[in-house]
Length: 184
Image 1 (cartoon, one colour):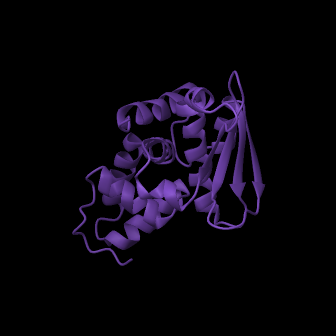
Image 2 (cartoon, rainbow, N blue to C red):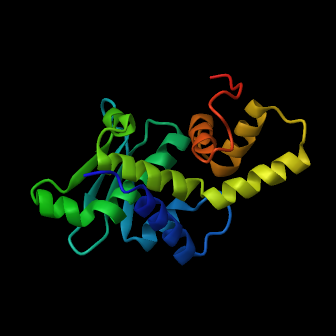
Image 3 (cartoon, rainbow, N blue to C red):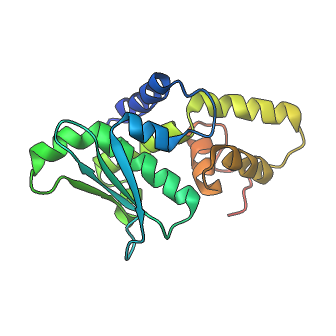
């Protein structure tokens, strides 16, 4: 199975549209309620960031590692919502005894198509392309001399994501090139 990038991004945009979200930061808890998902924050051992238990007929329970930073928790919730909306039926059909998906170190390595899709969904949900492009234009008008590093930090704060997540998003949207000088 190849990742369905367009489908993942489209589902995120549809959820934003259905909920009437038109600015950042995206209210994840409200979106989760719309999707009949309950979010539970608990400390997890090891590298696990989150997991989702999909319920037959829709909805589910999203578990989030409370020991992680708030920005990581937000990405995890968005990622697990992606699994819930993109993969719930498949997971029940693949293995009814294991309707569980986890977010951990493997999910960020871009090897499992479902993990790639959930990451695409999360990026579009938290940092919608149209919103980010507009925010970049506004920031450039308001602060034309802002450094790349400061612009990333300002945008990350607006969207309540990490600077690394915003850097990836700006790069994927071709707003920022990989050769731009950004201190890591």
